[in-house]
Amino acid sequence: MSNLQFNKDLEHGKIGEKWFHDFCIDKGIICINVGTDGFLGIESGIDFIVQYQDGTTARFDVKFDSVMHRSGNMFIETYQDRGKKGWYYNSKANCYCYIDEYNGILWMYTKDSLKEYIDSHKLSLRSITKTIDNREVTGLLVNINKFSDWCEENNHRLIKYARLLDIEDIDEEL
Image (tube, rainbow, N blue to C red):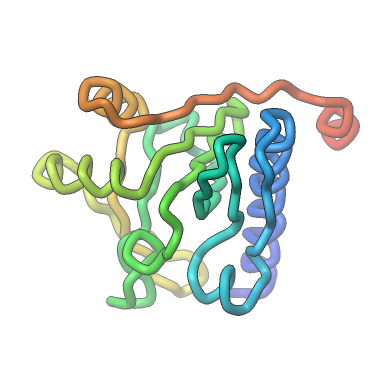
């Protein structure tokens, strides 16, 4: 991967992480960024550890998607670099926050819910491989609306949070 693309992806990811952090703070949830920690973050795929008001904790991996608004799909990375397992298999997070950048929507759900959905829909999910800076990335396309409906029908918790623009966002866009 070129340094330019890598740096662009990191910058994009930081925006998504800020949106997730802001959501937690607004809801009174303790949120600790561990994404750059060598043990908890980088090696395990955990961006945040959160503690809810009832004392329970969760480990979140935050994904920021700039094309989800066109396709309606989350790209679930299963493999990269010709066979190496991707974040779907390697992340030690037990929850995900998948962000639709264009619409400012944060989708939060458990890893178990996603795994159960993928396992029960494997024959109908489309797998694609993309080449990004001479690196192959393979993943499954999971339609967010179908996944959301499935979660509701199967008593799995999924949170959809529509983010409002704040003054900082308006300044950044001008």
